[in-house]
Length: 178
Image 1 (tube, helix red, strand yellow):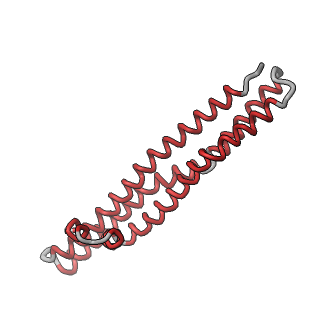
Image 2 (cartoon, helix red, strand yellow; image 1 turned 120 degrees about the vertical axis):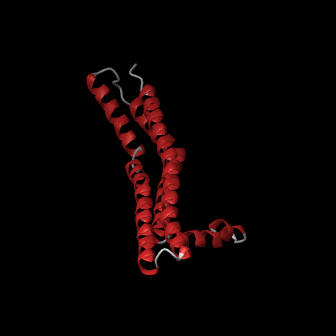
Image 3 (tube, one colour; image 1 turned 90 degrees about the horizontal axis):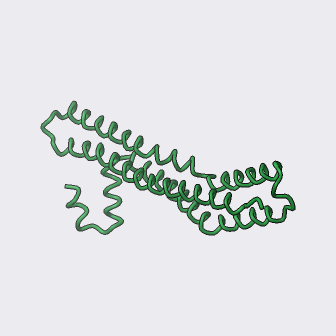
C-alpha cells in the first residue's frame, strides 16, 4: 500500500507520506539524523582542512625545540600528540551516542505503533484491517528508519576513528627524536 502511494508522488510528498505513516517517532528520528549528519559532516570538513594545519603547527613547535633526546622532550612529544588527538576526537563520542540512540528510537516507534494496533483492536475489534494496518505501518517504519540511520552512521564512525588513529601514528612517527 505504501509503495503505491510513493510511486506517483513527488519526492517531497513521498517524504511527508513516509513521515506521517511512521508517526511522531519518525519525526524525532529525522531531527536525530539531521544532528548526526551535521556532526559527521563537521568532522569530515575539520579533518580535510583543519587537521593538516594542526599537524603542521605541532611539527613546527616540535622542530623549534633545541632538545629532542631527553626524558622531558619525550614527555612533551607525548603530550603534544595526545592534545592533537583530543582535538581530532572532539565530537566522536557524541556521534557514537547518537548512532546508538537511533535503533532505540526505532524501537520506541515499534512499541508506540503496536500500542496503536492494540487500541484499534480493543475499540473496533479485529474486523477493521485498514485501521490495524496504519498501526503496523507506524510500528515498522520507525524501526527501519532507526536502523538505516544507525548503520550508515556506524560506517562513518568507523572511518572517522580510523582517520584519527592514522593521523596520530603519522604525527608520532614524524616527530622524530634525532
